[in-house]
Length: 243
Image (cartoon, rainbow, N blue to C red):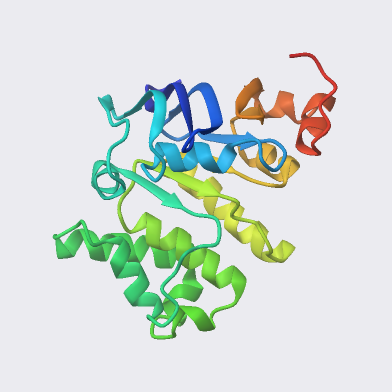
């Protein structure tokens, strides 16, 4: 396996005095998709936010491309090569598709690089080229999710964090989104995925981590976890397996 691009060591985080994530450790390598699965409230989204600098860790370390970035401001993490596609997309609705994409490239000053990234995003999501001048708020849910991913890719990340990309989308659109995920792996991007559909996530991931009440209780190859009955029980919120 390639050297880790993202390393998380004994990371703990929460909100005020309320601890949500406790002592989580894992790596993500270039060209690898690692998925976090578990029931609602397991701490998956909080973990992504702690890595992305949106929540301050109370303990532990985050290392990006060999540099410790624990607690670094989100905008500096974007410049360092980390991008988050948040749950809910968080697009600028009145702004056009192309304006939203250009916001993703705000840390890049080289026009040729921006053009190259835009060309890649349009190749992955042709509909975004077709809707370039259309306000983001008028797009379908699936198109908005594509725009959210495209905007993140415009920053040129080494690590992409994806929070519930399939939420509320039709099966056909979900297939398109995850086909792009497979293409990004081929490009060498490191992807950390939170996904409500455990079977879907494990189908497209290399490795998986099962979270329960803020801790990783099981991890392994995605293909192995997909066959593990405890994974299904954990995702449904009823854990009866070994810890």
